[in-house]
Length: 255
Length: 287
Ligand SMILES: Nc1ncnc2c1ncn2[C@@H]1O[C@H](COP(=O)(O)OP(=O)(O)OP(=O)(O)O)[C@@H](O)[C@H]1O
Ligand SMILES: [Mg+2]
Image (cartoon, rainbow over the protein chains, first blue to last red):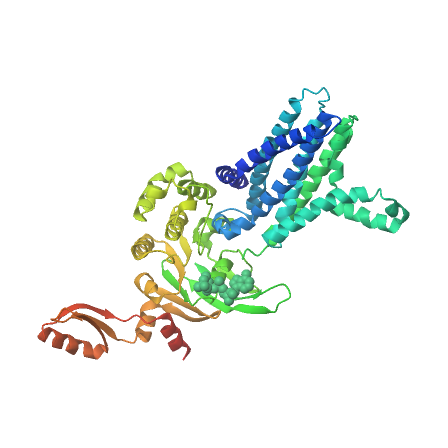
């Protein structure tokens, strides 16, 4: 219950800051960029629009995830707000959950704004290639950004804000490159390396699993079981990191 | 009410650095009904002590014991506590009113049911005019005042304040001091830190002095000040030619001086017993 109050005020506080305008701006930028890209490439305009648009959604999602993530606790310590809240009858767990949930609302709202702009850009093409898979892509990008959010908050519990941002970006990059690296000829020839990569793959999020852009672009159908399994994987990873964060925050010295 | 039992705490400057002992076997007791001043120079360990008391950080050894009246579980105990951190800043984008509402709701109290108290206290602390403004626009003293209101509005049994007077102007300081005295009369125990002896003099009845992580005094205020006051008086008077002069005299000489001055038709403007500075007190205690 307390967690909900904290989530509510976290959301209100961000809403009242001007941060949300950033998303409107980013959304408009994605919209314009996908138009520009379409005009300057030969070939299939709707594919280019989608390619650029969906790619930018994933990127801005990760960026916002890092930004909101490092602000969840660090900013609160800096402002002493955390002390005011934790001096009330509020457990640390409720506090942490409330902050993460509140910030997740914020992130989801921002992602919806940006996605809406992208879809708008796409719809104006009146393309017939509009595929329900696009919604899955957006949902997956959202999950991806939520994972980055909790990864960033986890890092911010053990290091400063700048380093947390850097580490989270590294995780984002690794999350994309690990899956790909399995396909390399070199790795296939060195089974030992494959084992290491497999271990790393379970520790780091596998964002390739969540990225369905290619399927949309080439119109290849995916069955819903495969899609749901990926979403479950993403949510499972989110919850695991969230629980780890809870554990660390519970033990943390709030100096 | 709250007992600090042989608390020690050390900090590492960085991960590989060696650790410094910040609190060394700190023991004292906060007895119900008192206003206790927690005195110490910058870096003495006051804030660290309060953070341990609030369970924000863990001591290396020793224990903090809360009496039954405050509750058993930490969250229960927190219901009886009002706390103001040092240099508060808070949510810049919430208004003062929203901020108070948020904290009150965390105490499971409906904001609507304390509107009268909010009104009364914000007026008393002269912050009512800014309640609808974003906290971003608050000055340092205003933050301290709204923080004070937030700390007392749920009627805690004990108030724990970390340098509540710092950054507050003279008028504000006397308002805050009066507020502390009023609250104490209504039964609130108050424990607050400061590094200015004069602040304690006006409000506290008990004093705990921390010097480099060690408690060097814990007891009655009057006793402490009497023992360590130089006993000197500052006499300020105006001469016939309009010049204002301040002289420091020993206690035994003050009557004679005043008599002489009056006979010479000088006008006495003030007679003040000198308060010892923190340095004086600490220096004397360590002798
Ligand atoms: N997180 C920390 N890491 C390392 N050292 C710390 C940390 N926090 C406090 N210290 C050290 O502990 C000592 C006591 O600090 P503390 O903030 O408790 O002092 P204080 O009495 O509140 O001083 P002030 O009057 O300046 O507020 C200082 O020497 C400080 O450098
Ligand atoms: Mg301090």
